[in-house]
Image (cartoon, rainbow, N blue to C red):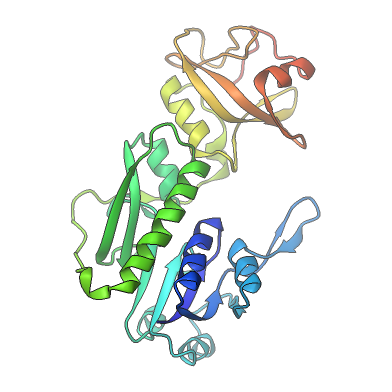
Length: 301
């Protein structure tokens, strides 16, 4: 097929690569414009832009697709299909109407659960036992289109980074399968029951809330690993917790219970395994405590 690909983060890269390897004619890649990043705040191209350029594919980064000029430029490419994976812009109806066949989306949840911006993180925070990928025909509503293909995977103890990487590969394979034999995939309306919305992550949510049970605090850790990283503050410095275990300890919520940084929660406790200080590399908790004392009895809000 003659395809326009639309995506921005690492999650979208496997689908771009899989479509290219399958021999589709990717006439252009649409991605979000470079954003300031890093200590120097220099503009950094998106992962999709970097991969598209390496593959020799034209890259476009319009700030909006709602104006006539952007829509005319899109239409001039004469696509059979537009394939979308975490693009970051809402596609207006004028864009959705352009492809000869359809606009399809790789969505990282079991629709209609977790429509919206952060389905992986919300599934972990909610304690869902499983998630998956839905290949969806796009329409003007927020992730409301008909489903063409659905696959499931258990969440288990995976963090958001691990789960996103798994789903990205799954979605790439599924999209290639759909495009290889479109007639084999019958569009199915989403159920009306079970709709939930995965709101964009607010950075304030990443602060560890020890007033919650340990099982929920550990979900915070996994939902925000590796970025932005769940955190607590000590001696005026943020410490990111990237992995932790739930422990059968009790104490006043937010209190350090021992010399291994076991942290009491409303019920139970967590013990961080992997942490990171500001401006430092990732380290074990034992390595942290050798140079950054957090004695038993320390209390965090």
